Length: 432
Image (spheres, rainbow, N blue to C red):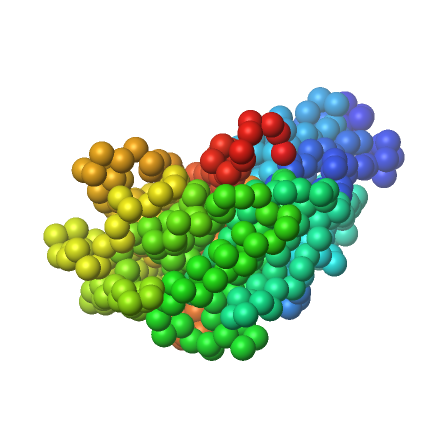
């Protein structure tokens, strides 16, 4: 072994940890490099972030430096840790909660970024009980809102939410953003889409301000009121709007596509294509729900409950009054499904809707199915949330997903979502 290889780190050139860009949107990749290290040396890089409630999320991986004493995450494979192989953003999408079953969600998207600390150690630093000083550190700021994006608090009639507007005069293609039974107001996806040129209304529908604390039924008139509000805004492009929706929100999003003429482009991420659990009402129409076969709940080894198989039996037990009439949708529909979704057999639901469209001679639907992806398919580089605590259940709910496959699905689907809305919402093919 050469003297250089034997030399302690403090006798070498200055050790550096470089992250570029260090200040960017959360869906932008970051290049991470470590320099000034001995050649063929094992090092650890750790990422740490806190949410607004001070819950800690961490990831780490172990790397071997090259002959120049450098680690470049775009070329250097992780030998072990929270991920393995060459994945430039692996430290970001493999972040895990220190306390089990927490989900990393940014609440305040306008005033502060997610601040991720990166620390470099000159050994295999895997024991949480042993504190080792880092050799270099770097801080990365990850924003959910781009320069010039404005947020308007919405309290119009019954409608409650937040409208995010891109910089400029507009008009902009308008989108309503719906999440599931998490309730409240979830803004991070709306603000990020606004940073890419869309005007997006993050819409609350229960457990927020003066809205019902619990969801007792889906009142589609409320969502039509939100659609009309958005279309009446002077900065929203006519003649129709888009909807992006996840989980229970995707059930509502699909219902909007079926019954509301204002909706011309809908993205449904891992949602049912039948009315489940709660009735849907629209004017004089009442769509009765399918109840889940709760005896088919399974408990994961982690203790989280899996609902996936509670709807599989529906294949042969559906009645027309339970099924959303996708053939009536006047616009385009994009189904995004994770094949390892442990909350819902979302591929079964989406495939049924696609077959229904074909039987009626309609070609307005498209399905993107991702093997290995779980339920919560979010913007790129978001940590996989395999399971999270649900107070209403008094236990954690399993969402599923293989780390690498899920990360790949998030990257690909985010691009496809934006392409879909640009194609079907823009009046011309000019770039946003």
